[in-house]
Length: 478
Image (cartoon, rainbow, N blue to C red; front, side, top):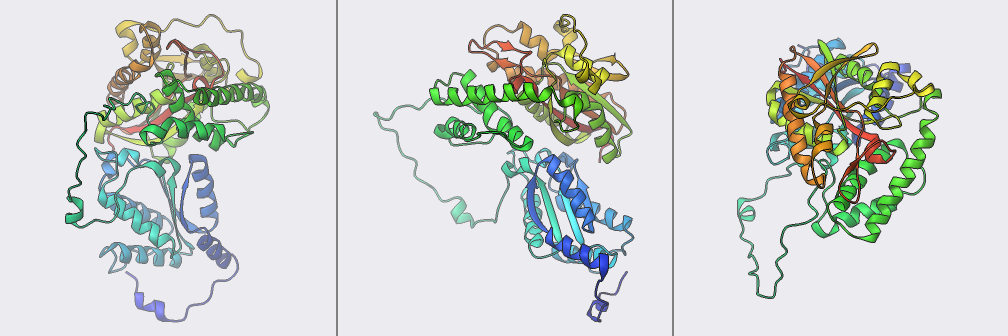
């Protein structure tokens, strides 16, 4: 226990590197939203600035309603690792007092402040898709503190759209009745909205404005785009618009914006892919899955790491699968990461298996590929199978590909049912894994839906190249 009264005595001023770190750390304080790559860069920058770095990627359902407790525990572990003193006598009596004590001990240990770098919070949301009021209060407190104290709060960019709660309002305002207009015989019945939200994780816009907003966002994206901007455009604008068009939207402006983005992406990716074997400046690709899984596993103290390849699981399908799987497993697993991986060209299963087996050498000297192997069918496709790919061992699930090949008629209405089947198969596999196994689930390539509603794959369109991935820490998770 330390004597807080000692802070009133004159203290020697910081000099040299300590002073520089203090100034840098305070300058980096505040709140920001960042992509995964940006969070990695911010972590390095904040740690170099002398701040006590607290990284939490695996914020899962077990943290729901307990975010303050989870963050306090993580801060205390990092302070202890830095050799800081034990909590003061008044620590724990309130959020403000506790944070003040932690910042005090961090500075006494030579740090310039505390940096909290948090991964996606979506797995900790409640039934309404929003964080619990207690967790929202914690984040609002930390955000306010970060504007005044040497505290940095870095949140995942995707959580900018995660639901939350603000200040309470008087009950009389909450339950105040608002008269509902009575329809008149001349009022047209709006009927069901034909442009339902097709893509999990897509931004929500008012009913009549959704496709217009997506169209405008794509039309405004002219010229070369940074990788993070391109991936965000794909997830938030291109995919929902592509699915709206596949679902029956017939507007020439929307079709033109979609087709232009698709053509520009395809041309640019074909040109860029030819250089990937000679440069380290490339996106994260499907064949990086084992390295990514190992890195995430080390970060979360996993005892084992597994990679599960889901054939033809494109980005929007992976988000559907992820949401269902997290709900199925509940407290038995924690969602640690959401990723977006790029497929090598051509976007076929055989090509991705070759790159997994040979790595960048497969980009430098591609093998002559045989005919695409037939995916498992029937009940066999609904079970995960283990296979050896070069020096790598992977697990593979064929249920998405099998359904795409056998379903009659337009594919789009069946995506939810396909995601249900995939999530059930992965849940069975996950429950059989040893405690504290890191399971990285990734698609190998995607597919596009043509104007007749059929699935096509093997090309360079965004939905064929970009596929979703996510990581779960399963078994014995607290």
